[in-house]
Length: 229
Image 1 (cartoon, rainbow, N blue to C red):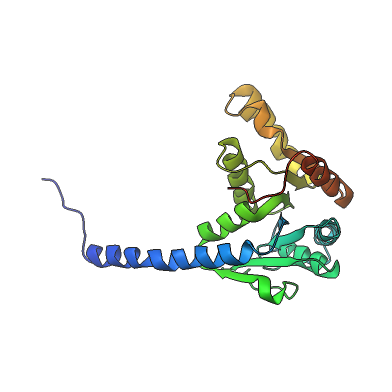
Image 2 (image 1 turned 90 degrees about the horizontal axis):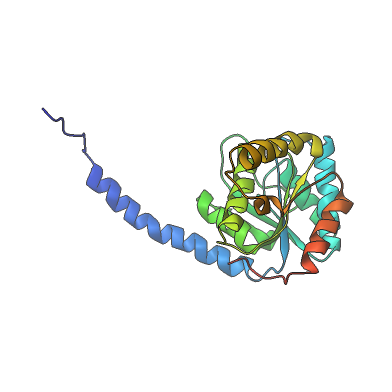
């Protein structure tokens, strides 16, 4: 005899889901209104667990300072670690410092280097991710964990499938990223043909702040600055 699934309370759940649409819409509207007024920015990603005395924290700070000196703003996830370093560098460079915050257990809290009028808070990861992708003219990806990898591969996928305009994706730290990139080329590209050679063209691996700026400048000599979709 077929067993019926347990559905107690299902109608109430569906009703709550429907009303959540308005909260989601509100986050999108607020994000679009605030981010569209900011101007060209570069997003910096990396681990929230990186301490201020770590070499990658210091490098992210220098990179962010160079980015704002080159005329861009800096967007981060608004929290500690590499995010804090990015906002700190932008702040020290006198440039735009944006934080797209989300409440997470253990590791997420506002850092003090975000411009007070550019600190946005989100409840939904997917809304926050749209803001990063739509309003970034480049991704600078420092060493990080699952969240950093998630942002990296989502951007690559959206560019690969022509859902967003192309922008440079810069991986910082050859020691950290080299093994992953070698695996992508050897396994995904050459052995299984699951990606195309052109899919990797916009990914650059660098070690210094000067190289980051060189990649951005080289790209935007050929392309105009604009929102990505």
